[in-house]
Amino acid sequence: MPTNCAAAGCATTYNKHINISFHRFPLDPKRRKEWIRLLRRKNFVPGKHTFLCSKHFEASCFDLTGQTRRLKMDAVPTIFDFCTHLKSMKLKSRNLLKKNNSCTPTGASNLKSNISSQQVLLEHSYAFRNPMEAKKRIIKLEKEIASLRKKMKTCLQKERRATRRWIKATCLVKNLEANNILPKGTSEHILPTALSSLPLEDFKILEPDQQDKTLPIL
Image (tube, rainbow, N blue to C red; front, side, top):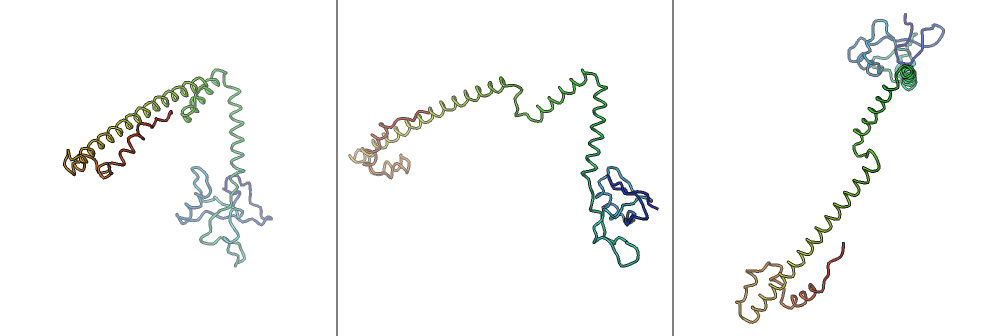
C-alpha cells in the first residue's frame, strides 16, 4: 500500500477518505525512463513501492470506464510545482550558509571575498579595476586615433600629388600628339585607358582645379 508521493515537494500521503489515487512507475523501460526524467530528481531510482499521486497527471491521462481510476497506457506525469521545492531547498542552503559563516574566521571570509572579486574580473574581462586604469586606456586610444588621422592625411596628400602628376603627364602627351611631335595613338599605349580616352580640353579644365583644391583638415 502506498504511503506517500515520490514527487519533489509533494506532501501528499495515502488517505482512503481523500479522493487521490497513487500509481506505480511503469515497468516498460522507455515509459519508466520518461517518468524519471519528468520528475527531475537527481540520481533518483524508483523502487517496487515507489508511487506518484494523481495530482501530477492531467484529467485526460485517466481511464474512468471501470470502477477504479486507472492510468492510460501512454499517460505521463506533467503537473509539478518545482518552484515551491526549489524555494525550500534555497532556504535550507541559505540557513546552512549562515550557520557556516558564523563559525568561519574573519580571515577566511576576506579571502573568499577576494576570490569572488577575482572571478568577477575574469568573467567580465572588459571591466576595469579602477578609474585610473580606464583613464589610461582612453588616453592610449586617443593617441592611436590621432596617429591614424595623421597617416590618413599623408595618404590623401600622396594621392593628390600622384593625381596631379598623372594629369600633367597626360596633358604633355596629348599636346605632343596635337602638335604632331608624337605619332597619333601614343597616349593609348602609354596612358591608362581612363585618361587616354578623355579629350585634351578636359585636362585643361582639370589641371587648374587640382591646383586650387585644398585638403580638408581632420
